[in-house]
Image 1 (cartoon, rainbow, N blue to C red):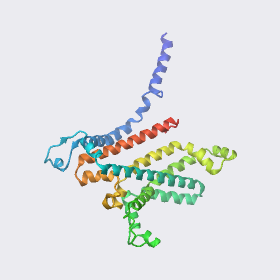
Image 2: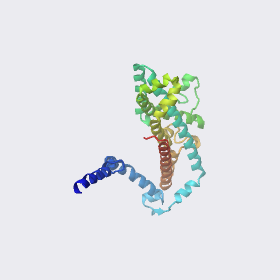
Image 3: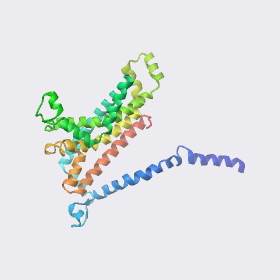
Image 4: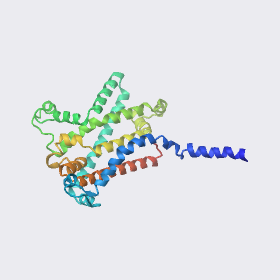
Amino acid sequence: MTAAATPVAARRRARTTRGPGGPRPWLYLLPALAVLVPLFGYPIYMLGLLSVFDYRQAQVSGGQPTTFVGFGNYATLFGDARFWSVLLQTVGFAAALVVATLAVGAALAVLMTRVGTVPRAALSLAALGAWAAPAMTGSTVWMFLFDADLGLVNQVLGMEGFNWFFDRWVAFGVVGATVVWHSFPFVMVTLYAGIQAVPGSVLEAAALDGASAWQSFRRVIVPMLRPLITIVVIQSVIWDFKIFTQIYVMTNGGGIAGQNTVLNVYAYQTAFGSSEYGLGSAIGVVMTSILLVVTMFYIRALHRTGERL
C-alpha cells in the first residue's frame, strides 16, 4: 500500500507545484513584482489618497489643515462642463493617433519586407532615430519646422506667415504628425518581426490557392499577427491617451484659449497652475481608471477569440 500510494502522492504534488494551475509559474514574476509594485503601486496609492482631500497650496505650506472631502473632488470634476469637453477631445485625438500610428507602422513594416537590404537598413535607422529622440527635442524641432516666419515648411510651400497653431484642428494635425513620428517605429519593428516569423509555406499555400498579395496579407498574415496587433494597439492607446509633452510644448500649454487642451495637460494646469492638487489628483485617477478599463476590455475580447498574448 505504501509503495503504491507514494507515486500517486508524488504525482499530485507535481501537479500542484508544476501544473498549469500551480503556484510555481508565478514565482518567476516575483523579481519583477518586487520592483514594479514599489515604483508604480505607491504613486498610484498617493494619487488616490490626495484625490479625496482638499489639498491646495495652503495645505502644502501648512497654513491650513488638510480636509477630507471624500468624493467631493470627483463631484466637482464631473459637474464641470470643461472636464467633459476636454475628455471628449482627448478621446477623439487619441483614437485618431492610434489609427494613424498603426496604419503608418503597418505600411512601413510591409514595405520593409519588399525592399532590399540597403533601403531596409536606411529605413530602420531613420525609424530608430525618431524613436530614440526625446519627446521634448522632437517637439521643439517640429515646432521650428512649422514656424510661421522661419519654418522650413512655410518656405517650401510658399506660405510665409501662415500660423499652423492658430486653428484648433490644424494645430492638432501638426501635433498628431509629431506624435505619430515618435510612435510608428515601435509598431513598424514589432509587426515586421511578426511578418518575418510567418512560415513561408503558409504564404506559398495561399498563393497556390489563387490568393493575391493583398488577400494573403488580409486573410493569412493579419490573423496570425492578431496578438502582436493587440499589444501595439494597447500600447498606443496608453501612450496617446496620456500625451502631454507634444501638446504642452508645441501649443504653448494648450493652444489659444485652451482649444488644444488634452486631459493630461488639463490635470497639470489644475494641479500646478491653479494649485488644486486634490482636484488634479482626481483627474489622474480618472485617467488611470479609463486606461485600465480599456486594457481589460481589449484583453477580454482577445481571449474570447481564442488568441493568447
